[in-house]
Length: 350
Image (cartoon, rainbow, N blue to C red; front, side, top):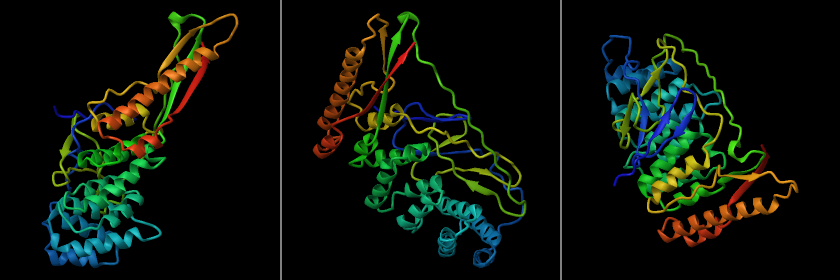
């Protein structure tokens, strides 16, 4: 039975709703991705001259036309410009993104993994991840970098990038993925001291998100930006590797806003979606968000109830770790490193 995995992007947040098989996808808006000029694609010599120009605007146009004309023979010039811009103190995002988009549209290239790591760290994460998905790249080198992304303590704050990296590792069946997902995972449960157990609940929280973006100078080419998401909603296209990648273009005539970023990291439940896909035969327990309701008592002594609740959650976690080892998803050393959960039981009066 195929794994069902989906990542939905809403107007103000990113949420994991399930899975769909070791793949990446890019947010697509085909009606936006239309160049307003009707000019004929320049010949390769003219495009090379643009790429060789010291003008960043010329270089952006060179990258645009190289992609439009599938001029793969200009890869050396594109790579040179990419390396130069990544090393600059003040980087031009249109040159970077349009150059990376050219490589994505070529479908195959000789870019080293180390250069794509630099692009990722320079803020070009979606494009770098799509390029890293190219099957011809050195798998071991790619997986080392992807595992580092998943294992970063702040990694899941970059929600879609973390999910995309984990998704690629899942498709590669990379050892160490489950341990990287579980590393530093923090669970929070709640013990509610209830005056009325039948009508006792935690208070919810809401998070607002706002963003803005201004269109670049109209004399520049379109700014091609990739936004990662998985199939399952209107306007998305499944990407196997990157040859079928599509783009969301925004820039000189659309005035479109940048997609929002959630201000919160992925929850444990969202991260555990990857574990469930890596070890579908293991029934994962519910730990994070579990709630114990305790009837209010005159003596006010609830420590024993709370500790019993905590120990039950610790047992659930331990059983999960052992089950993951039994199916080969964790090594003996990883089991030892993950033996003790990071668990906080918050006691609240209601």
